[in-house]
Image (cartoon, rainbow, N blue to C red; front, top):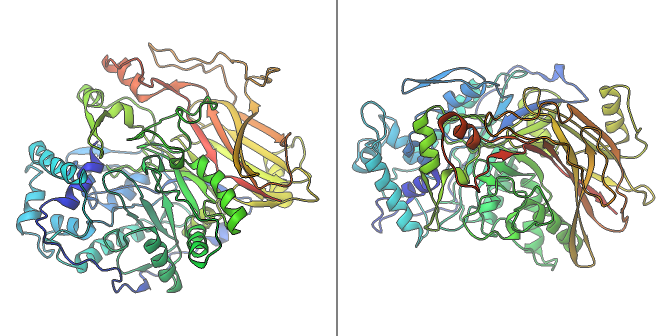
Length: 617
């Protein structure tokens, strides 16, 4: 539960002014690491298949995960994602519903150091500090909590007065980082089964000190990768990162950076761009648009769409809110999508043109573990009720106030293979869920029908007469575009309550947004004042059962914006809500008698968010 502080504790432990000189330019050639596996392109579907995955997972090679008890490798994480049972420290785990694709994204910061700590024969393995860090584990693989807490405390103390981060003095050089990276790449390649299960090479670039999360997950299209992943020790800011991504792209790599936890970025992720079209400003905006195609809107450490304290007119903005500071608008994705339209008007470039994904940020090497389930034991439930989550700002929150099971990313791709999964992300034909497997389609165009005899007919119309989520649509004679919107429930979970269209636009120097309830379950129609009548769906607080007779299995609508203005830049994205269901907190209360305060979120409405469609005058 304390992975953030534990990770940063590792970065700062044992400093005594003696550090390795950091390099902004480390020799780092790009090469093809493995030959291609069997080609799956013969089995492609032009109307595209739906695949669910997780692009944000940590294993024992991440310092924070290791210090909090994770011993699993990349290989074990991938096998878990495929649905295979894995056994670690006499505990066998199995994912109930396997994923279709996955990327393990261990922190680059400390990657070589963690390889040195864990792998016998690595340079410096038997030195004092690596031995001390290994000592958090007893011979039976249980955690020495006293030693673990010492490491956490050291990190927390230093983070309140952070210094420039670089490799600690016991770092034995970049060959250790290369060894760790190679170990990860081998597992990524070995577990790749084109047409069945896709692995994507990746890692996390983790910039952030006491008050900000400026993290990016770096995802590669194939195994044309650099010799080692550069971290925030070498790439000190976003501009350094984008310059390096441009450099390795020139050498043949195809790569993207995905920001995450913008809810914790203290306004730092969606930075302002000057309205002046100077070369530096334009270059920054172009590089960002080139490499940051997606943003992670939901994960274990909270939701980054909106915050209820700031979006008071959005009745569903309270979902999994978590921040370490007073929330600020610049931390949230909906704000960034609107601000990007303003930048585009001044610069001609939208640096915040993001598609939306979810993932877990799981630090237990368990990708895809996203369902709301009760804790395995009463002891675990008690710890979640009572344990503190140390904040980097020095305060604490309870774990149950912070944590949720995380999200998933869904893509519409021609086949389950690296090139197709990555390309779907790159064109933003992807969407986020809060952990469920809602199916979602979204098209904009002209000449659509009000209803269709078959799903395939609707899809053909969508692609032939319009564009899918993640795309631009250019207006025809200034006419209001038509939207095809379809969603279906997770086959194993709750029914759907409604579909909403979220619209944002920039006009006369002001950012605007509006929410439309465009499809309602149970045959409901909007009230005259625009509000939605209650369908009576509830959750039984004694049993956890939800109203299975409420909600719809599918919702479909052919919709046009009644207030469309052809002269302004705008975007539209979908938010699909399930009927209310029990959160893991309620399930723990029911099973173990755990008592939570009145403000605990016992009932939730799981959801999905599409990538936007942008309308250009």
